[in-house]
Length: 428
Ligand SMILES: Nc1ncnc2c1ncn2[C@@H]1O[C@H](COP(=O)(O)OP(=O)(O)OP(=O)(O)O)[C@@H](O)[C@H]1O
Ligand SMILES: [Mg+2]
Image 1: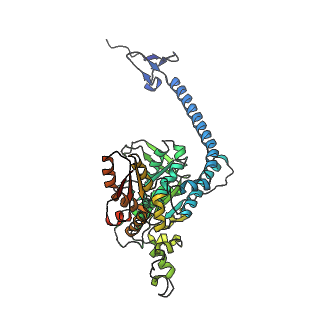
Image 2 (image 1 turned 90 degrees about the horizontal axis):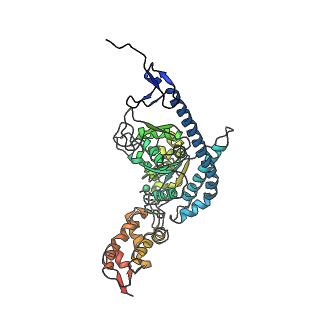
Image 3 (image 1 turned 30 degrees about the horizontal axis):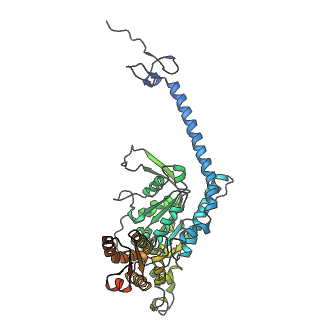
């Protein structure tokens, strides 16, 4: 005999009501083996409770963040930030000032945005930095990042490609910030993004280059523009492949401060061309560089105007979103000499400490240091080659010194640098 089709009834293990099951959603959780069940009303209640709790927690976090900002402002006044940068970066005073003010104002905007709802807006001032290779752009930003109380992420713009090309989409820059913020979306939304090597995404048809192929550089700039203007950027978690069903994280970039930097090789020629327009041949173009004159880049870079960047291959809309132009100078011999010994992480200081651990005193003669600086100037890569030049001399020393245990003094002379002679070693 067929069983009569009696409606099913289950009892909710929480509220103990017995419910007639018309659809599976009447009792969304039901285990036929144990009879454990939870009815939809109980689930709704738990949900409501959790939502309220989440909102409270978010509110508390927001309040804590706002309060923290007061303290952050006090300890991040521009002169304090600059003093910190001075400990690591030689020269580049103007750049240090601009960055200090940019960061301080960013904190202020944040505080103002949280506390004032009268409709007045303080607009953010994104920064573009231009300076020759090895003059301290990346170093400046990496030291700045250590000081900050807000998330900060560096992304290499040259690795970005337009969606559809092989490489990273521009969203990566925001994703890096999200992880720097330890996955706190509100913090990420008020962080700072540094786009390094920004000149590498200049349109190839710009004046800097005559190659016609352009692997989506204009597309990258268009995508970046949206981010700079403020938009909700969606990305998947790290390690998760992008597919239509992958859960995404959304971050609004409206309040994120953008700093971009690059060497902009050849921009001095663009500036020179503009300046010499309408002048006779005896103008800038005809001037040759004398021995004591500054390099052409330094002469001209401070006169850079937005139209030069446009000419270089950056689209006007992007330039319009980078109102603060910050220029850095190349480093001369004296600056390089100071970089060798003065910063807290100066190469010479580092080697002194290393050898001191073997009971050895390391002495670089003044002439030797100057020879290192001279060599670096010849290599034309700013301070970048200093470490390598010293490393060449120090390798043998660091290999041989630990063979004995007695205290010694190692003297690096000019000849060691210039002719590759062995350092003088004196037993103490
Ligand atoms: N002004 C400076 N003061 C102290 N150290 C410096 C300075 N400029 C550069 N250095 C040192 O030289 C190295 C290279 O500098 P950095 O990476 O900042 O160059 P960059 O300006 O970013 O060049 P590029 O355009 O080639 O990327 C770093 O190790 C940095 O510590
Ligand atoms: Mg760099």
